[in-house]
Image (cartoon, rainbow, N blue to C red; front, side):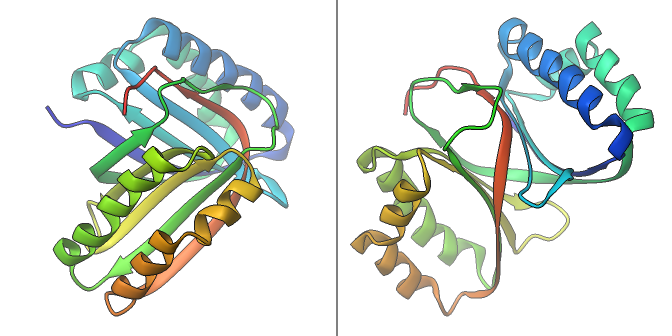
Length: 213
């Protein structure tokens, strides 16, 4: 059973921003409460452009996703999105790892959490996976301030990885970068990585089901 993992990049019309947030909030709340197969839903925006949204979604299976999109709460959101969304891009990912603390996220307002989306292009997926995945597993287990780490490969660009990451705050993220394990991973993988983009995001809504790492 393959999980569904997608990243959406949305531009929202200025006149619909408040309504889009409120309807999206209801969709998130209903989905995470009523749909066991909806495992994680996240919305954030670019710090200086609140209408530029990054949405990350994770579902247990295609069956779970179909249940979600056929729900009444999603249909209300979908109807609004048809008029509120100015432009959209969807990136469907091949999941590589989902790691998070056992306590579920239930965030619907701005906090001190540090949220990031990284795009990394590599020359060899297998070699890169052998380096990055063990480090991510170490990080979620050893670092109190590392709350969630997701990784997947773009189905349309098979050497492009996406990493969605949530930390307790910016200090926790900075501490993560200073660990010997992170520095060793960067050193070992540097010859494989030929492009990297890191987007620092302002969170709006971050929700997950309970999960045992």
